[in-house]
Length: 544
Image (cartoon, rainbow, N blue to C red; front, side, top):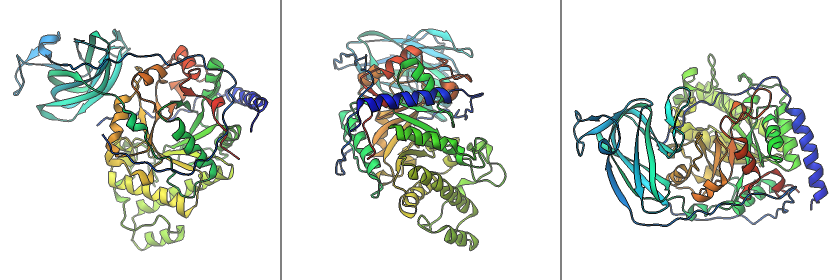
């Protein structure tokens, strides 16, 4: 077992490494600026033989406990005609409304009303509206402020209702809204498009059920390494009780982690990079692959390693990860042939004979090249929380153009890496963002959700939405703009397995200093010293 002196030595070595790596000339930020699009499960369990992990010996005690929230369930339902409770102008030229009319909000306009509820509990809001390609943000509380572009409210956003062209007044619902006893202000604001809103119904709702925390801890790869099995078992031990801290880094540096350590005295449990650095077509390609050395160092020190893959398309002309910026035709990728375990030579013959398309051949070449990168990490003893094809079901990326092709690529990649290449160091993290794009539990270890919210919401509505995947996998917040508030997660029973805070100018400036753009230093310090959040020094030992 590691001793406390080993832990202190490790922390010292890592601190020196981090502070050295923090000195960099510019932030190599990749643009992830795609807006998220939002659209009771019977569970079974399976398990592997538990692999023992040594308990962590922390360098300092946590300072903060979870706050207690009083939830008193009382029956409640109230319907409010928006033309009566809001100051917005009343309209009545559309058919099918109730009462005296309805209100209209154009892009960035809003309607605010007050609802009086009998108890502090979870509520469900249903708005009856028709719309033209609209996203309506549901904001609880807060005050009016100018964000530099338009006037809005600085309350907590409980989600955005997305609607395409809906010509009849139709109900849209947001659940899991925590309201305090008495008066509560709610704002409906158009993020884009035009919304015609007739009424809202506020009634009893719910938040994340404890049943969500009954999961499978068996890796989908039957040949997973002992370290990988130990990590999965550890995940099952803490899921529903604690949340792992995670941080995306600017590739080739530990700049973000250094800034966090300087402010909080602690480091994240998970360091997450992007394997775009290993793609020669990418503008962020690093032939030396220094990023992999930093990941191996982090793993050797006892930390967990994550990697996304902002996949630059295998185009002969215009390669990019955005569908609007590449000529790559993803819809031509699919094939009826199972080539997941075929040799590269056989796949080339299939292409030459016309049995698979050029796009399919190019995809397979990319998959094989990335397999070599992950194999390098395997040789370095690094287990990877691997999350390619992010947000496919939310649109905007070239891999978003077809759910069928997306599923084929994901399943083919899993089978090829696990079986053909025999990689034993991958924990497969799917964060596709849509049930239509979910490949099934036999191809997924962890379900991830990307939450681009800067108002302090726990994401419990999205957490509950994962029931649509019919999965028994743990849920993780795989990307976020604002560091979660442990107290709010506890209030909403939304105990994500981990969160991963965004990198670059989401957190720091080009000099490596915290900007407080989304996460205040106070919130950051509290998160890293909270008993509900697991930091680097609190991880058990996973390696032999």
